[in-house]
Image (cartoon, rainbow, N blue to C red):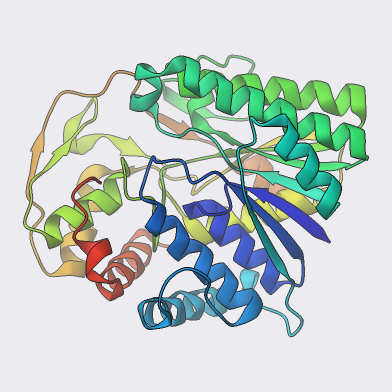
Length: 363
């Protein structure tokens, strides 16, 4: 199968690209190198994809890439759900923006994908509060451009990377996919609801088989996005002897359904292979963990105390407990990673990275 992956230079996008290539699929990666975090970090992510597909790097010196690549690849090989096959797929990358309708159309016509995994988006709840219009343009217009290209070129499979933020603040009970009430409390969450609705319409009107993957985050693991993600920020700040501010409605007792990256990638692959006109799945750990638990695991893995101050919660910050029973029953999805092991892997990889990565100030 030939799969077009949007946001391929990002944290999740680069992981799913490697997993697809490892199972023999060809990948067309698209990314616009949004400055939400440094281009060099995204180039590093892409080099890991190129190493899987071609055995060489495109952007950075190989001596900067190989140690961390070997570590991450050993993690990938250890997960039998993502274990590579003998025949690897090919990788093509194109830099461009999905809100550029002409770029999208040319890429689709040239590469002729069989399916799309749509992960590119303006991310982050706090930033969306400052730039709601920008989020609407990227997350909704971009999605519409992709679906239109699928319609016109007869592409019949579309996986949409949605978010648990569509549920809003729902701490009273576990939320399942058939809950009719979606109350996002940020422009980011609202754009994800809009994207889901557009996907449903496309499945009905255009016959595009669409699976909505509600990603239950934060997603953590080696090379997690640096900016705005607690786990990576806490590791970076602790390494550099800085004090981190902790946001959350309940301080250290705030709970999040953090999900390890390999568990999410496995879920995305299941969504890609799922053959139904339209469906929605919660893909995540299914169990909420307290921020205090995250801190404890980071301290164990680093052998160093995390310095922190608890501050007022961000507007738009929400808490919820999400039910994954539907994905378990229908897709056969089961998350496997324990928090302690996942954090250990993330810390080990961080410590292998070059100084330019470990010493970044804006995280």
